[in-house]
Length: 435
Ligand SMILES: *[C@@H]1O[C@H](CO)[C@@H](O)[C@H](O)[C@H]1NC(C)=O
Ligand SMILES: *[C@@H]1O[C@H](CO)[C@@H](O)[C@H](O)[C@H]1NC(C)=O
Ligand SMILES: *[C@@H]1O[C@H](CO)[C@@H](O)[C@H](O)[C@H]1NC(C)=O
Image 1 (cartoon, rainbow, N blue to C red):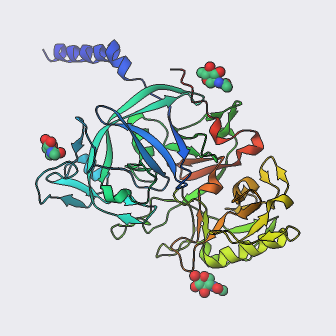
Image 2 (cartoon, protein in one colour; image 1 turned 180 degrees about the vertical axis):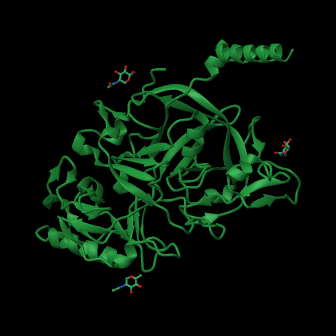
Image 3 (cartoon, protein in one colour; image 1 turned 90 degrees about the vertical axis):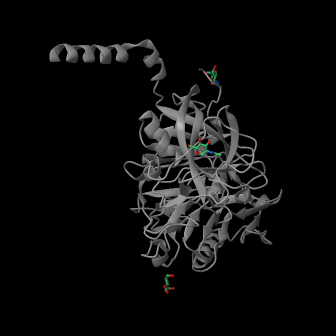
């Protein structure tokens, strides 16, 4: 009797493994793609995620260091597949939520009884609130690395409900933020676990407001026309953990989910800029160090670093006519005096030196300079004041047309430097679908 039962059980397992309907639903993408555009007014990077039932395309500000996806649930959220996440559930513990919500006014969308609560953060304005954790369906295009392929779905993607007021300061029409930070509930980790692919993702931001950059979830190839696999030209540096959260609201003991790297010195034209080294490391209070951010349009430097870098840059460009500064920049030049190269205006390269002297992220003119008018080019770095939380925040302008790969499993960053030197740009992913 017992052996017959076992036999039957095995048969039913084999049957289900080979059943065609299961084979169809088990299509496993190796990677996913999202287009990203640059909003001219706010200089924010905008992506769209198809969420809910029926699917709606939700415009979101891309937040590289953001904790998770959050969207406004107060207005216009209609979905038959939305579910609040209960306190004490497995999903709630995945989010590391330490709060359980009860509503004063009975269950409404975005507030239900005993729901898991997190703090959605508008990292552009530094405003946070508390919001219900929910799950809903999300659809996204898969890729073979060269083109978008078939659309795949995550039926229960975790996110947090924000409020309408939290959208203030985001680009117009945007309904939330797409967090790509180092947390289990950020989009990269959820997509990797939903489809069992590598815990890696890459961003490649376009420098133009008229063309589209790309985020890849999963490993390369990342092919940019004309057939350049940008994943083949990366230099690697460790990602560093800041032990103190950099979110607007957090619990004591939480580490930051933003991406920090170990800049050891800065060289301009190959010459080291004199800097206070203490500012370059992260102290026990979480101050100092260098992070990468897509919500800052330009690199922000602590005042003494800003002054030293600007002075060194001016010294190397002393033959060029300096013109009146244009806010928020402090060093501007007559562009007529500056030649152009494949990698942008012909100015001294700025090297961010990493774990060894031989490992550096070279910033060429295309990334260091900003054309503020027909005749004026400015050094695209801004003064972050004294005693800022983070000494160096590498901002959007300095990331454009560079491929950055974040490997969460090995905790390292791969960076390409300017793809212009390889005769391609971040707007050269072929978004023509071959599905
Ligand atoms: C509150 O949660 C219950 C149980 O999951 C659900 O049936 C109900 O629709 C939710 N209410 C709202 C307004 O989301
Ligand atoms: C370097 O920076 C640290 C941290 O802000 C500060 O305490 C120290 O006084 C600075 N050293 C110098 C020589 O300015
Ligand atoms: C883009 O991809 C499509 C679909 O594979 C292909 O037909 C087309 O030739 C590609 N475009 C270029 C410029 O290679």
